[in-house]
Image (cartoon, rainbow, N blue to C red; front, top):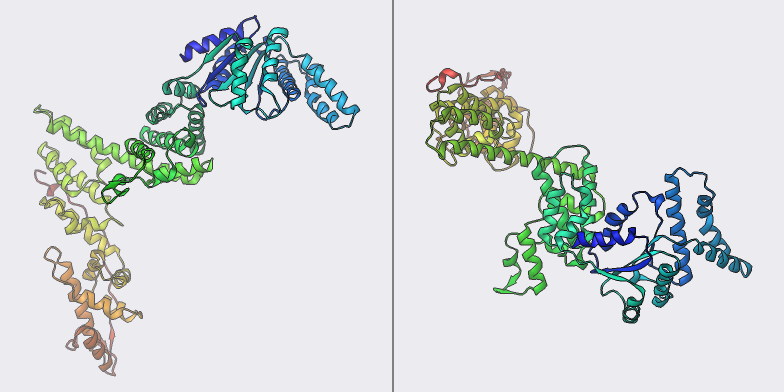
Length: 603
């Protein structure tokens, strides 16, 4: 239907025969957009060969105002047309540039000025002839303009001035009196009445015709169709916000999943924020929606929602847009404010890109395993190639259980060197802030890890990480709360007794006794011998301190139930019954080499 109506309007506008035609249809269906963006560009491909005027009746309060507006629109179009023909010095162009200013100026001069203004207006309107004219927003005319006068003007232009007049009207928007006048006169004035009521698919196609080459055209179109949006303004506004996001992100090429996420968020949020009149759900409804939203909105087992609320919730639930993620929240802010917060949007997109990259890598890794699980072909070489290609991308996010399975597979297929590199990849991503993932309770969470090369490499990495943590930082970590921190415990286990004495001597803080007591009284941990070593080191340090003096012995006895160590236990006498701690020895922080290939089974 859209194509047929477009052809009808194009044929009418291109004809040399004068007449008038009305385009009616639902508000927001895209009548004006169809005319301006599909019909007019074709008819006016060479604007200097045809003449055109477009006038909105919005706020026009009299027939004389309408004529002046029509004359002004006529002059502006003709100026542009002549400019394109390089008639820069045309006196007609200069005339129309100053015409409305002169007319308005004369209008404020009493008596003579008012009369001259009317004369100018009549003269300017006299030049309106033999052209295409479009009148829009009929239902929004001012109260002072009688619809009969407007229809009379349309008739006059088509019959006396050889014009082809198009009138655009929204169905059901005229008041009762204007509706009666319209129905009484339209058959006398118009030779045709075109009804434009496109389907959502036609509206979205029309609204996005300028963006078909954009990477977000397809996902935005799909999202708009899924929401059932048939309002051309909402379609265009969605496209405008996508363009704003494009500008904010610069020339960066995004993954398709990220583009899809932005497009879906834009479509729903435009519908919600700018499309309430078209049935969009309230923003507050989307914000409070989630997986369990229906259950949470019922009381005492009874659903208290209105039919409209149920309709909104069904749409939101089916569409599955929840305003939790940073990207959705950044898009919400953009649509709500009318412009993007560039730094916030860029950061959210970066995080989304990283997350989508991980998900894509996981899908590839899963597909690599399918080469093993889905066939009995002798495809070992293909499996090894797929594992070698995909494992480095997922090593940072896969659990030790999957590491062990991958290592077993590639060793079985004759690549022990690849198995060792998989282990190194996995451990290297867990050094630093993620060292806790090497702890026994994390390592064996889903399945006991038995591979000796993995266990040895993990142990070496834990020792290396413990030595990297300064003893004072380890003490502060234990003092800060009541938890047991493996890195801190490992640091105390690796320290010498003299180093711990030196630490205690240099510490003046609340919680000194409780922190030492927590390390001294560490429970038995059969999976980690360092817990016992840390406790023994603190005990030995406390014994040395207790042997310095009566006051020191009293403190250690009351704090830790520790008695002085026998003399000669590593402290120097100061001659007054106290002892001076020995200087701390150097801690070996050289990294321990990763497991060698020879240590791998079959290596």
